[in-house]
Image 1 (cartoon, rainbow, N blue to C red):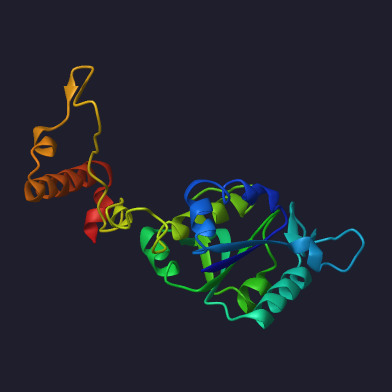
Image 2 (spheres, one colour; image 1 turned 30 degrees about the horizontal axis):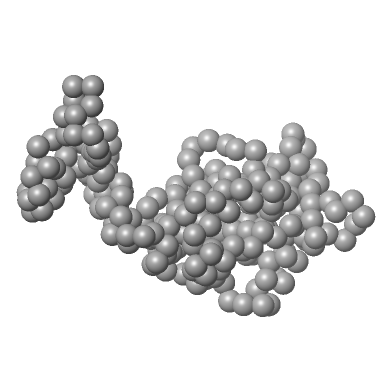
Length: 225
């Protein structure tokens, strides 16, 4: 998979995308992430990417021309399955979204900044708008890092045990059950006996029951589906 991220602050993305599982995905050649500096697509000596908004009001707006020029150049080199804009008013990111994105081949992620991007870019180029929650960040870079991480770990061959991702929270509209490791007793609290029994079927049944109970308690809205 190839993901091209358009940003004015690529340095914000360098660390989260070059460590741990994302580093493993890139080293194995399963994921290619390119950070594209939007300012390289400006024509003035100041590399301007923003301007005052029409109608007045606080906050600068990212201009059409640099973004369009950047996207057009990328599209001339390959086909993109999605052009995603990270924005607070987009569709809330879910595990279902991530599952779908992980099946794609080429993606562009556009990181907003300042007051956002000119609406015409959204109308002309963006195919999907994604939010990571009902709050506002300084820019789309951290949100983009979350999106890439969520996608990358689902790519076949990235995780050492691919079944691990299948048992994550939200994969089946349930939260994950409690998990334990050594020692068997810690500060007077023991690991549930069933997990030490070696009886695989009963363990799976226990985990499923625990997942339902935890979901009922913490996220009952998930059970509506």
